Structures are given as C-alpha cells and as structure tokens.
Image 1 (spheres, helix red, strand yellow):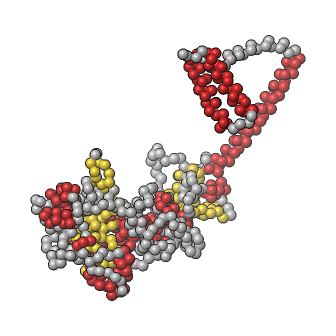
Image 2: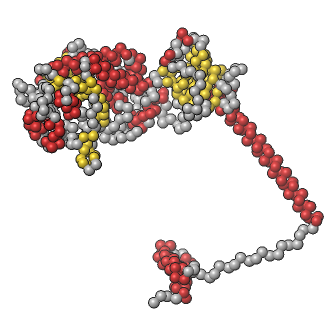
Image 3: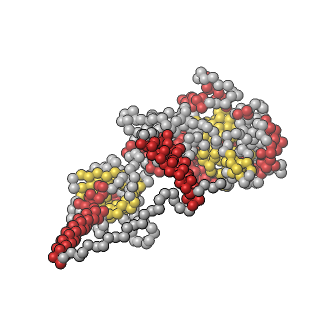
Length: 606
C-alpha cells in the first residue's frame, strides 16, 4: 500500500533529525553519509508521488512598504548637486583613463611600426594581391651587387643591439646574410627597438643597400657583403619559445656518437667541451626546427641529388621507372617482420620490398629494365643506429643475357655516377655538412673492388676474427671487414658476391657449381651494407621448391609464381637503402640524421 504524504514526511523528518544529531556530535560525514543519501532518495520519491517538493511552502515575498515621503525641496537640490559632482568626477577619471590608454596604444603602435612605411608587422599574406616587389635570393648576394637595393626574406637567425644600432642575421635555406641599421633621420629609434625585440626564427623581409664590409663576416655564409637596412618587416612571428637555439643545434658533433651498437634516444648526450648539445630526441621532437640548420639543409639536398642521379644514370641506360604497390597480401619476402593490416576483411601487410612486382615487370611483362623508388616497411624491433622501420628504397631489376655480372656492371657504373655527381654538384652542401659533422672524403676505385664472400671471410680470419664461410656476417664483422679492405685496398666502397644460399631470400638463384652458395651480392660503404641483390630464379618449379625450403605458403605467392608460368626472361637486380647511402657517404653516425622524419620501433611522430 502506498504511503501517505504524512507518513513519508515523518520518515524524511526523522532522517533529518539523525543527520542533525550526528553533525552536532562532530561525527565524520562517512558515518552519516548513507542516511543523507536515503533522505535525498525519499525526497525525490516524495516529489514524484505528490507533485511538489518536501517541506513547508515557500513564503511569498512581502509587498514593498510604502515609500517614504518625498524629500524636501532643499534636500532634493542637495542630492542633485552631489550626483552632479560625482558624475563630473567619474567623467574626469574616464577621460584620464582614455588618454592614458591612447598614449599607451600610440607607443605600442609606434614600436610595432604601425603607420610607418619602413618597419613593423606586415599584413598576413592571404594572396590578396600581386605587387611589383622583387625578392633576391640570399645565395645570390655577392660584391658585384654593391650599391644596389635588394630585399630578402628568411628566418631571423640572430639579432643584437649595439649602442644606437642593431645587427641581425637572416637565413634562407643554406645561406645567411648580415643586416645592419643605425639610428638616423630615416631610421628612427623605434625601428632599432623593433628589430632588436623580434623573436628569433621569425620570418622577416629585410630591404636595403648591398655594401661590402671592411672585414669578412664570419657568422654569415655571404661573408663579403652585408645589407644596410632601409626597411624591415615581420612576415610571421615565432610565437613560442624555442626549445633550443640554432647556435646550439649547429655545434660540431665530431666523435660524440658511435655508429655501432644499441641506440636509445633517451640517453643523455652532452658535448664534452661545453656541456651544451641538442640531443637526438629533442631534435626529432622538433624536427621542423632541426631541419633548418645548415647541415640538415645540406644533408637532404644531397639526398635529393642521390635520387636524381639514380634516375639519370638508369634512364641513360634504357631503364624505365615503375610504381609498385605498398599494400600486399602476405609478406613480400616470406618473413614474419611485417606490418599487418585488415584489407576489407582480407589479411594484408605493408610491403617489405618491391621485389616481386619489379620482377614481374622486368622479366614477365617484357619491360626488361625497370627501377622504382619508394617507401619500404620493416617491422623489425631493431633499435640500432643503422635500422629504420620505414626507409626509402632505390630498386632496379633487369634482364640478363647469360651472367649476373651484367647487373654488377650496371651497379658499378651507377654508384660511380652517383659518387662523382655528389662531389661535382654538391660542393657547397658537402662543406655545410663538414662544418657540423667532420668526415673523411669517400674513397672509391674504378672499377669497384670485387671480392667473393669466401675471400672476405678469409680476410677476417687472417685478422684474427672467427668467421665461417657459410655463416652470415654480423654487424661488427662487416665493420671490421670494411676497415681491413680500406687498409689493404685503399677504398671505402666494395662489393662481395657468392653469398651462402641459406642466408638469402627464397627467390635467389643457387650457384650452379656449389649448391651451398648463391648468385647473390652485397655492396658496402665504410663497412656497412647499402645494397643487397642477386640473380633471381625465373623457373616456376624451382621458385616453388625454394619457397617450400623457406616454409612459405605457396598460396601467399601464387600470383607471383603464376607470373613465371608463361615464359620469363633471366634477370637480376637489387635494392639500395637511400638513407644508408647518404649516411655512410657523409660519415654520419646515425641513420636518423639522413631520414626526414624517422620511423623506428620507438618513434612514429612527428
């Protein structure tokens, strides 16, 4: 039977009394909290049952009392005078406040260059208009331009005041130039303060006359010129404090990091001389800033040139560029280290290699000579200074007439073309790298030194290193062999062929004279592998036999094997790691320094 309003009110009142007594006794809330929750629950039921809140009805507001009799005429006049005086006082304060704010705004606008033609914050560039302004590239600033007016745009690298003047360094890509301004009739003090107060790395337009200084300016790349500033505008301000200064980020790093062994980006890295060094982790966390350093600008221009030279050389030799899929079913080379994904309900992975598709194109589709460039994915938990989970592959595949030495000759020509091209076309870039990362010039022979795998193992054993002819080379032994070859043959670049069959992929052609060996090869720079390749198996029966030996499910490579069932040309090729080539050519200690935005087992941003 439902409770009446009186019964429920009594229960609520009783619970309220218990809470009141508990509070008066100083008991902690934890002891009477359950009573409070019960009472609140009953109040909710009360409202639901009776359509009103529990408790006495709210008191009506009392009607306002009758107004007092009006003040006398005398008091009324007195009150009006007081109001007028108060209003006058408030108006005076408001006028003073407005004047103060006007002066402060005027001063701020003057310092920001508002209303000034020759300095200040430029309007946001939103493609509103096209003017007749022209900008000169900083790299083109040379003494022959002395006396000419120029305008340059770049990042504000440094700025320092000196008396009534200011000196600044503006940088664009690899190049920098000094600007100087002194207070004068045309250069107000506000302009000097404006330039000196800008945040470093802000983007600026600097306009002035090219002059030739009495002494070379060591801090700038354009040492024999400077700009006598006539106007200076900020295009985009740096609005956050820099996580590191460009000066610290550009410090030489020779000998501070080994290029072998485990890598941990959390390890502290300090310069033994000054104690100031920007560590690799901080650099990568702010990669967009780190890439502004002249050394990094140079590294990635050299890397771009490697790709250009790779294409140039192969196109001259009759190759065509192809584009292979990066989404595939199964694993590219039958390994387990792949990034798996769901492809509309089907299992798939990111490509470990363009290998199978470039073979199809060259040997099975009649294109005969092909190359491709693109990302390669390896889900290897390798935390070293030479491994990445995503890198750029430069791959080629070509048909052969009778021997895979035909492929090796192409590679010999290709690498010499690339090395010569870098040395000839990237002289300035090489010097910018050397300033921060001192290195020895790469030594290479013409033709490239060729050793068999067995000969390389023998050199190691003669040096006291335990190395069997049929076991794979460790990283340490590769490095040691590189040192031995450098000392004996005076070259940093060489290759070995006839690797053990057991350490090569399933599609590698076995050696016809020794079933334990293969028609395969690796190329090395400074004792580290930069290319792996081989003659490929082009007979489908032998492909299936080799795949079974590797425990590869034939269903996963069915389309690949089927492509050889309609007649395939004998062929071979290989894959080059772009970042490794750049890293080792420049003697860099860490492959992350040659990767735009590195991806390793612990990093997937930025």
